[in-house]
Image (cartoon, rainbow, N blue to C red; front, side, top):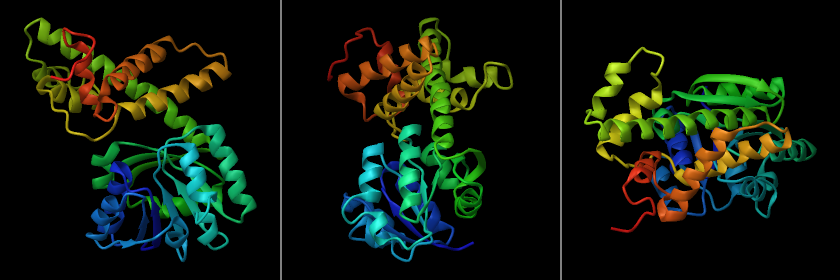
Length: 295
């Protein structure tokens, strides 16, 4: 299926999603406040739009890849937002990671404006987007999710409908709890291996197929061991997501002690100026000087 799509938000993740849509032949209009991000996609055949409203005109689906519920709200319902330009019945697919309750509110407002809404947060990051192998967890009405699947097949290998609006976002919070704890566990294990004189980069091979194995172990322990900090994600985004999970935990009286510790480690690194770095920079937490310095 080739479609006319709009992309609002062309950062690290949105840019990778947009590039994949272009690579698979979709027509794409893109809007981002950062003109350099837009230029990266226009070089691949996308068309620049002057506003979210302009991007949404004539689009069969509008893809959002933004950093907070407030930004999503402004991009859709604010001045020159998506709702101003989109035709009745246009499908909005929110691939941002935001609060489930906020998503339910946004979906209701979209319905009142004659628009369809599907929350479709992702797992796999920019590398999986580039190969069309993202894992997506969807929330929304059955008919809207069916429409979204046709579009999202270009970027995802695993798409699961989790329930009504907000269910995808709740599932993403669970995903982030599992990822955050796993990242920290693998970083801690790497530090122990180094202290014990073990070649940490050989551990993933040794443990492959065992109970301790995971995609994060296989990808990140070699990066932790070599201090490969190339950016495919952000530590401060993990803070946001873990805080979101903890907010749901508080509202439901669910104890999450390990998640709380994990969030604080990420928060410490963010406070030390590493919020924009990849998860690989968790190794900085295990330096002899716990209060990080600019070397």
